[in-house]
Image 1 (cartoon, rainbow, N blue to C red):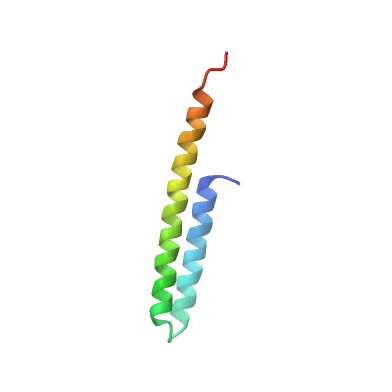
Image 2: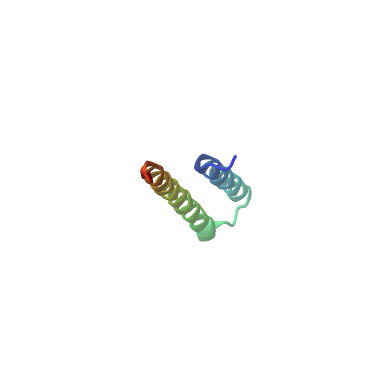
Length: 66
């Protein structure tokens, strides 16, 4: 399962695990907020990379070599 969707699902699972860990601790403060923001940025970046990869692949496949 080596698709962009798999990467997004993995990132979402990581985010859920981190949020659960943050909820278990009382003294999370600024660090937990930073982790959540970074995790969201990573998910967005993976989404953008997936879109770009799909467009590049589609363009490469549409090139006529004959």
